[in-house]
Each structure stands twice: as C-alpha cells, then as structure tokens.
Length: 354
Ligand SMILES: Cc1cc2nc3c(=O)[nH]c(=O)nc-3n(C[C@H](O)[C@H](O)[C@H](O)COP(=O)(O)O)c2cc1C
Image (cartoon, rainbow, N blue to C red):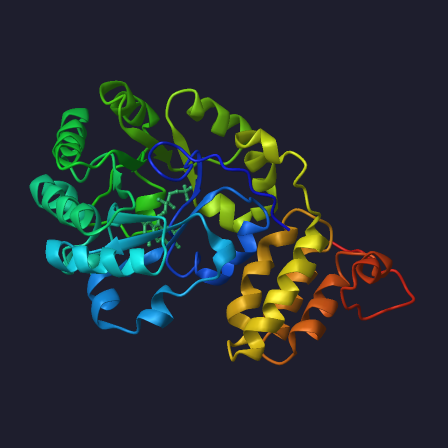
C-alpha cells in the first residue's frame, strides 16, 4: 500500500514529520496502522526503560513489522552504560534512530532518574549520549522540554542543548512547554504550562547545524507549515493518535511526492484487517490490535456507533465480524463488498446515524 521515495536527510532518516512516542498508544500495532496513512513519517516507539531492554524479554519489547520503518526507539534511563547497551540492542533489532527521553515528567520515571528531571543534569545527559553514540551507528537523538520547574529561562535551555551538542548530538525534539516536576500530573504537564514555540525557534537560530524538531499542541497543516518555516521538523502526538485520518493531508504537504497516496478510510480498514487476522492467528488478543481503529472515523457520521462496536465487540467477536459490525455504521455495504471487506448486511446499504 505504501509507495516510498527516498527522502533521507544527511542525519539519517527524514524527520520533517514525526509521530511522537506515547506510552500505551504508539505500540507496534498503531505504528503498522499509521504507516498506511503516511509512508514516510518517522514513527517513535513508546518509551522503553533501558534496564528492561537489557534484562527483559527483548523480542516482546522490541519486535516490529518491517513496514514500520522509518522507526525510532525511545529509551528511558540515566545510566550511560546501560543506555549504551540498550542502544546497541535497539540497533541490532534494526531501529533507525535511538532517542533519549528527557521530557517525561511523571513521578514514576523521576524516581528512576528518567525523563524531564534529566534537564537539570546536562552533563549526565551528555555522558549518556556520548556512550550511546559510541555504541551505535544510527543517530542518537534527544527529546526534551523547554525547561523544568522555575528553571525555564531560554538560557537554561540553550545551556542544556550546548552540553548535549558538545557530546555529539545533532538532533533534538523539543516539546515547547516546560514541565513542573512536582504538583502537576503528566497529563496536566501536557496542557497547563504555556506553549512557547519561540524558544524552540531560538534554539534553531542559535544552532543552525542541529536538526531541531518542534513538538506540542500542533494539529493542522497550516500550523505544520508555519513551524517548518522556522525549524527542521514537526512532531505530532495526540492529534495524530486521536484524529489519524487528518494526518494524511499533513503527510502529503510535507512529502509532496506522496500526494497520490490517499487511501480512503475503508481502504485503510481493509489493509489493517489483514494485519488483524495475521496477529490474532499468532495469538495476539484482538482488542490489542483493533483498538487503534477506534479514532479512524472521527468526525464522520456514524462515528459514535463505530467506536462503540469496536470497543464492545472486540472481546467476543473474531476480527472479520468485528470489522463488519463496526463498518455497518459508517460505510455503505456495497463499498465494503467492492473492497472484499466483510459486511453484516450484504444486500442493504448501511443506515447512517450520528
Ligand atoms: C498517552 C501519552 C503518553 C506519552 N508517552 C510519552 C513517552 O513515552 N515518551 C515521551 O517522550 N513522551 C511521551 N508523551 C508526550 C508526547 O510524546 C508529546 O511530547 C506530547 O503529547 C505533546 O505533543 P502533542 O501536543 O502533539 O500531543 C506522551 C503523551 C501522551 C498523551
């Protein structure tokens, strides 16, 4: 389904349009699904703690489908040797980039000295990055915030970037909000601190040799184009997950060579259904795979029934019956039949409701 051209930057992969690492959301099944929407977007894994990668079930944690490339592995940790070993393992699994999480503010990760708290320790981050880079040939990148707690001046951000850059890192993804390490939940930390895109633009101006990518609150093609006039790439998180079909116009805009790549929603379902059949036959519980289809019809008449069918039916129905039941709320039966997608009502076009 994907028609790839090579739009690879000198720093490895093309990162003009990236999909953010999101725990519990951007698992391998989501990434496979999203790849059919954008052949080129750089996809990030959920954060994996370096310790788990080194000592845990690697196949379970790191395996993915070849279609997911280009694909970055995000690691959490602050032990340089452990991070280097986890990076080596990630490269062996074929990931195109290894990213270090310096942006997550949750208490749980702070306790392990992981995430945004590392912005207060730029020398340690530099050491981690240095050792990670020495262990792999793929790019090692850093995702961070514009600051933490009261330490949110542009100077603090510049010093952080300078230290990590001095260790050899040339790619930064900057969430344009500071994080409060105490007092706000991770969710509040994605909403309450104001977005300061100008701080990220200033980093690009100060370090033109670095690949600077902006993240936080970006939703529309127009916003993407405004940011790309200032920085090298955009990273979208929640909007990409909860409104995936709208990402196609962003992908087409960022990679004009793919303007002809415009599968309909039901074509995406047909493509993903083959994958659902394959994964469930291999023993993956259907809800783990089918849940990523739930936001696909966002904004379309019948979307509520589509979501309900997928949510309620996944535990009991097989993949074909689940998809047929859900599609009956949003697509005419003849469209499904033409694509060979199962339908519940072969002779009667589906009634549409909001
Ligand atoms: C459910 C959820 C899980 C997240 N998990 C991670 C993570 O594992 N690593 C990380 O660096 N950021 C994580 N984030 C933050 C996103 O990568 C991103 O920086 C943030 O959502 C802001 O971008 P957005 O406004 O486009 O969503 C998570 C965000 C959400 C909503």
